[in-house]
Image 1 (cartoon, rainbow, N blue to C red):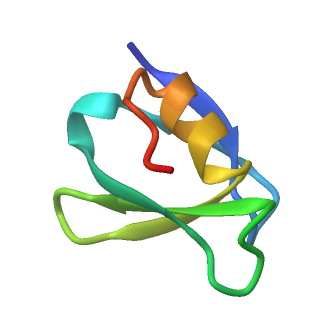
Image 2: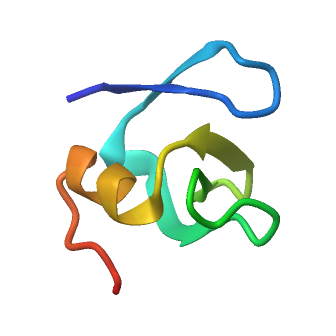
Length: 64
């Protein structure tokens, strides 16, 4: 399953495979609108969306 998002830095489409995602957390500079997604390979992406919404889209249990 591939899930589409919008990159908050470049405003381009990014597609995430939940199997390669490692952790999610709110972006400290915009906690209500941007989520930091850290991948297994160490890369970090910033996608538009509050972290609980992003977690639900990826089929994960959101951290509260």
